[in-house]
Length: 137
Image (cartoon, rainbow, N blue to C red; front, side, top):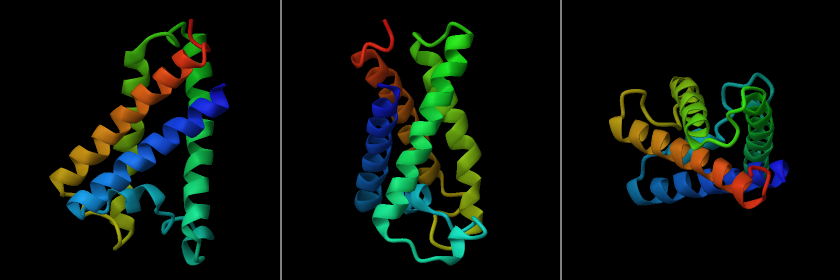
């Protein structure tokens, strides 16, 4: 069920950022898919489905680690830790935007708002999926 929660929440975040990129023309979805700064991957052409698959893989690993860390602290039932952790992840990843010309400028306030909102939605989705899957009682 944790695997499914990671996949579903990854789809939610990807969909959220994709819709906002289409609506605003701010490349926040591009930032989510961006691998330009990885030594080997950055020099390769990756089809969209591979980029998205990598995103889903990362999402699944993040959810698995997050759940077990929160469980150790007996916080896995609470929504706030999921929101907080996903927001911290968003804060850590956004600055990679300076490593690519295809992503938003680091000082684009609307990109920050959309990006952080998406990561809050992601945290809520993870918590909700775990609740629905009865992983959380």
